[in-house]
Length: 114
Image (cartoon, rainbow, N blue to C red; front, side, top):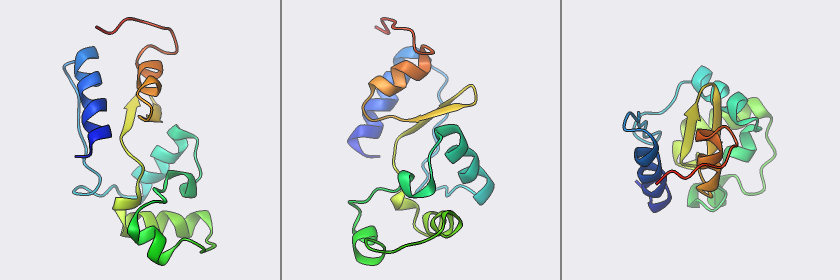
């Protein structure tokens, strides 16, 4: 788990002890789940991709693909998925910066989580 994901997890545990963790690299989402995440995130598939990953640089940096093709690429190379992704009540955010998580957890209302 990367440092950003660990920081997000610590923040989530402060807010609620019941946290479900899905490590997308180990437990690759299905196509429908990925499409659902993209809908909740309100992102196009290319916007969910970590562009600094070696596999992106090596294989896809200058590639032009349809959304459907990018989805298939993401499923084939889950390391490309931006993370952490936090889902709550049918909404999702990429948890960088962590303020996005706080906004999601508090429904946009500022709240002291400590």
